[in-house]
Amino acid sequence: RGDQLERQIADLEADRRELVSGADSEQASFEQTATLARQLAVLAGTAAATGPGIVVTVNDSSGSLPARALFSAIQELRSAGAEAIEIAGADSQQVRVVASTYVVDDGAGVEIDGVHLEPPYRFTVIGEPQALTEAMNFPQGLVDTVAESGGRVTVDQHDEVVVDAVHESTPAEYAVPAD
Image (tube, rainbow, N blue to C red):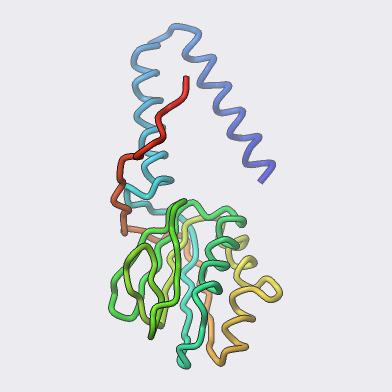
């Protein structure tokens, strides 16, 4: 993560030098703003994304896996550097995970951001595949929790996955940008 941040700092410093130099500053500023807007749309979940990552399938045949186990898995994936996450259920409905995502128990499945999903659950996650895989195999993490309830988890690494579920953004009711 530190190396990634160092590269990001170096890229930002190079962008700054280019903008300060004045060479094609208007075009460079426009391109930089467009790139940032695309990146923020992916992070906010309002745009589809593609990149390396993993597909995690959670087979919970007993239906006893609590929502908190799925929410913990989301947190572990975020901590491992996930940049985009979607979760699909047996009926192929899918939900894009964003900062405000909630997961609650809902009878024969879970409710994620108002959408009812039933097992098996499929997480499609963009990020560094090895780090994401390790997050799923963390002691007492998702793999262990599902195994304790009689289920099974498979984690497949891919050079490219597609997260195409998007989050419908709603304007903030109270918050406004600060100066």
